[in-house]
Image (cartoon, rainbow, N blue to C red; front, top):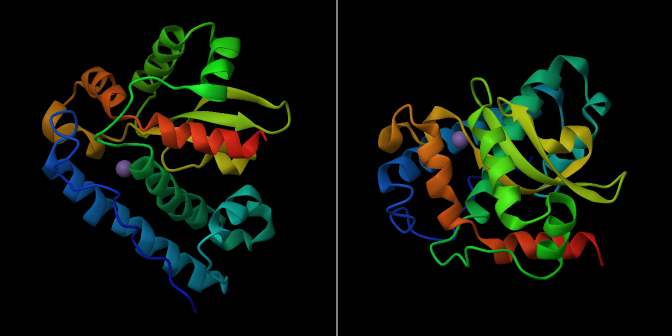
Length: 207
Ligand code: MN
C-alpha cells in the first residue's frame, strides 16, 4: 500500500524569519506534521483504505463513505495532514503582501477591501477557542469566497468547501516565539502569505 509522506517545504526553515522562527518551523514540520502523516497512514490501514496523494481531500469531503469506526481518526489525522500541506505552501519568504487579479477582485466584492478582509480574518483567527484553523475558502455551492474557522484539525473539505488560505492557530504554531500572544503571531503571519499561490488556487477553480 502506498504511504503518505511528509511533504517537503518550498523554502528553508529559517527563511520565514523574523516572522516565524526557525525552531518553530522545524518542530512544526518534522514533529507535528510528521505525527499527522503517521496517524493518517495508521488510520487508513485500520479501515483498509487505499492511499493516493490526491485522495485524502476526497475522503474528507465524504467521510460517510468510510467505515464509522475510522471517521474520527481520518477527520483528525487526514485533516492534519492536508491542512499543514497547504499551510506550508501558502507561505513564502518573498510575499507580495497583497493579492492580485481575480482574487483581489473577489475580496473587494465580498469584504469591501483587502484591509477589511484582513481585519475580519485576524479577528476570527485570534478568537478561536482552543486549537483550530482560520480559512479563506471557496464555497462551491454559492460560488463565492468566505472566511470560516474549524476546530482542532477539521478540514474545510469536510463541509465541501475548498481551502484557499489557511492559518494554523494551534499553540505549537507560535508559542516558542510569541508565547500566549496569538494576535502578534497573526499580525506577523500576514507578512509571509504567498498571495501568488493563493491566487493560482483560486483562478484554477473559477475559470
Ligand atoms: Mn500545526
